[in-house]
Image (cartoon, rainbow, N blue to C red):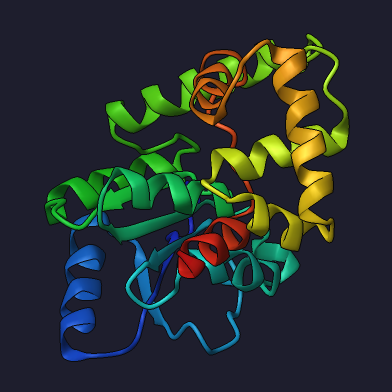
Length: 230
């Protein structure tokens, strides 16, 4: 007799509510997977058989807490695909992707049918993202790869740190605080940076960064702390 494959499990990581229960029931009916609602604050127990997918509700797990949550998963689930739903827009998606190793992204306006199709694709080992988002990622990594093999005009590691903060909109004072330097030292570094890349002011420097280094992605908490201080 042919052996039947054990059903796959979809963990919907969200708070339990009548709405989330209806969502889980719909997914279970239309994907033929075992769908289990998993509170973000409870320990995840790996299924005894079949593959698993972690479907995270971004309304209940912030993108900045995703790495810690992912780190606490059992070892048997560490390689299971991770996807997020209720993503607001492109910026929110890019922020989530910079924090966690997501294989799928579902925007808030996605239909349930699209989510079911995406679940099947993810369980088959595919990626599930919008074409626009995928294009942005490909362009970013292509530019990053190109720049990884060429020197950035002799800039030192410290100068690259300053450029990264500069690209996040940091002032001289904020750069000094973050790197534990005096503002005078920051100004000296900026003078050397401007000289090396042949620019005369911050605007020209930002244009140079965009053209030559691509979108530098500083640590999320660094960017947020700088924004909060404006």
